[in-house]
Length: 225
Ligand code: TIU
Image (cartoon, rainbow, N blue to C red; front, side, top):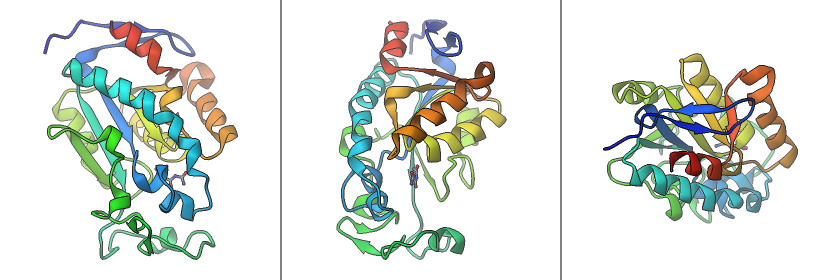
């Protein structure tokens, strides 16, 4: 690995100084259950097509991280087949007839090992990339993500994935409190609700970067050279 020392990324509210050796790409929940018809996202009443514009820019960012030997981690939201890690409050939420653990067109909704739980083929994890299975919205809660990042001396995160205001934002807030600098490329995160996506991005960069920085994938790729 031959890292350049830093890359200056144009961002809001001001430029982000990216240190490649200390900056992981953290891709949140790019699973079939959220991005394809017949999964958990659709069972919640959502139009999954809204999320699919994030796939191509995530592919480009992932390729760049891999090419440079930089750290990549993926997360998946889901539960054990016996649902022992599924709180009743999460199971009972909403009024859909289909619930977590029920059988849909891609297997049991949001259950580990089922076809719908898999990360979409375009972003399949490589054998040496950490995959964090998380039962909640935040990727730090009830997982070893922090340990895995600390072991690699990571202190910056480029956070991408779905959905902007739910799992991406929860993870961003958890990361911020644990001392990570967080950069979110707006084109690599998506929501079923465009107005919530925009509000979530605004919240990150408000108050001179209360949770971190917002940029886009092209600016990051250009800065990395
Ligand atoms: N419903 C929704 O917007 N999101 C989730 O349930 N999980 C994630 O964001 N991954």
